[in-house]
Image 1 (cartoon, rainbow, N blue to C red):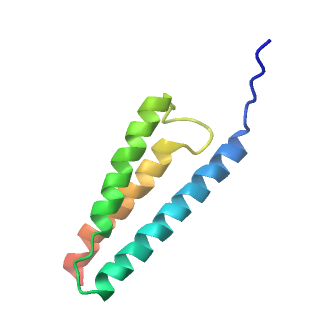
Image 2 (image 1 turned 180 degrees about the vertical axis):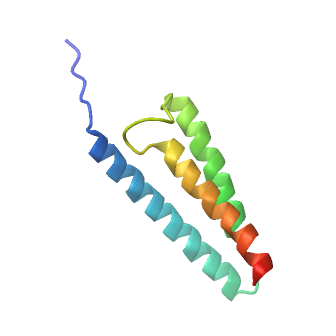
Length: 93
């Protein structure tokens, strides 16, 4: 008899939030080192690539974009938004 464990939507959402926070923190640390060394900032490119990777993972895992729990689709949306914010905010300042 095969035993399957279903994780609750709250657990899945917590995992996604932890993943998102760890990735954003790593990207910010990497980009701060780049800026401190005089190199150009690649934060928008990193977050854009992370969004594409999250979409690929969501398709591979066959996750629903309209799931009750947060999943790779929501993570891709957050990374896509972070990527676009820099392109919109930089010309203003």
